[in-house]
Amino acid sequence: MFSTAFDIKSADFLAELDMPLYKVASGDLKNTPLLKHIAKIGKPMIISTGGGTMEDVQRAYDAIMPINSQLCILQCTASYPAEPEDLNLRVITTYREKFPDVIVGLSDHENGIAMALAAYVLGSRMVEQHFTLNHTWKGYRPRLLSRTDRDA
Image (tube, rainbow, N blue to C red; front, side, top):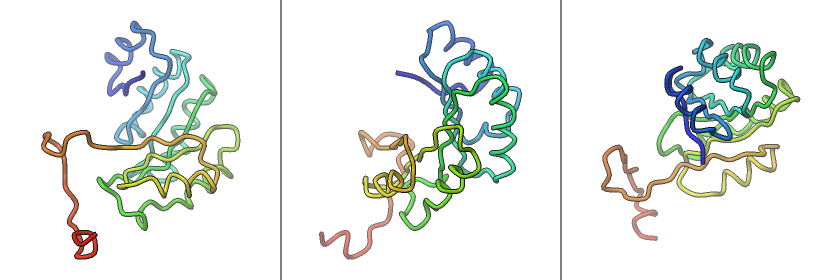
């Protein structure tokens, strides 16, 4: 089990719990002080890149790597659920070429598992799969079904 640290205080709290690794949400990709703080804890880090530019990812990489080389960069499309054509899986290849010394993965927000398999073929070695246990819970956003989906 591990958790996402959204600020320095929560990162320190997680360190007290001896988390085995740390996830950094896409929204904190540009939060260099948080990235460096978590890197100093010395545990593996996963950063999600949804909504970020290549410059943002490079800046995060440059902030973390001199401190902690245990890094995974996740390609992420910040949309829930994401349509397969919006996942932009080619970014996985770009990340692998640009950052050959880290693990590259996919933060998969699609309904299904097919794109995770495609991401693996492209070199993804970690998949974060988002799913919903109960569609009545707050925060669930149902997707509109096409006629084909309804009839299936």
